[in-house]
Image 1 (spheres, rainbow, N blue to C red):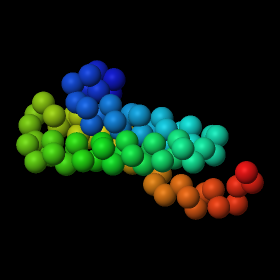
Image 2 (image 1 turned 135 degrees about the vertical axis):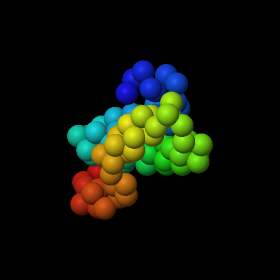
Image 3 (image 1 turned 45 degrees about the vertical axis):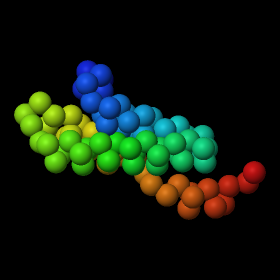
Image 4 (image 1 turned 90 degrees about the horizontal axis):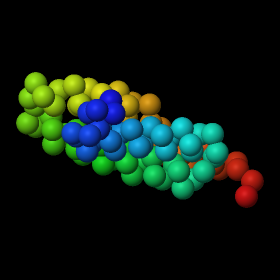
Length: 85
């Protein structure tokens, strides 16, 4: 994945989104959750553009980014409703 991230921005965004998701889950950070959603959206936008021009070279990157994005959780707001500030 890291080699693909050097060639395809959307893969890098997917990795950042997965990392931010993990951080948000562990720390209950709303800011990290917002970052996860932002980078996940950027990754999905990039994947859709790459999918429109599907090639043998970008197919693995699309699959990797899609799998990475599948582990990101959107709408963290519901998780933080009961959080004591």
